[in-house]
Image (cartoon, rainbow, N blue to C red; front, top):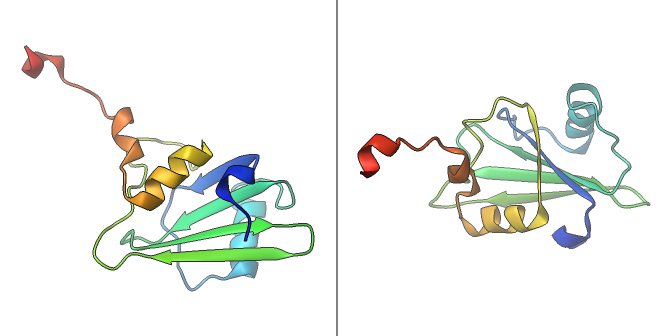
Length: 116
């Protein structure tokens, strides 16, 4: 298994994904919808509608690998206030997401009227 920090790019597919899709189905999404090169040093991340399952797809010179993480009592933080369908994130942000930290709260608008 390749370390998250070893990937040059990490991309999130923002829309919810059917978790029945496996390597072939997800690779079609990366190629045709996300318009990204499957064979670069990239990690592609997908999440289900309930945000309880996350799949991560990558190519490692000899073939594809697929990781799955299922949360038992929590939900993954997921981008809601962003319009882009494909979002690039840093490896440190993905590690925080996997630990349960909401990295997307920094994109929320702050209403300064209530802070005074």
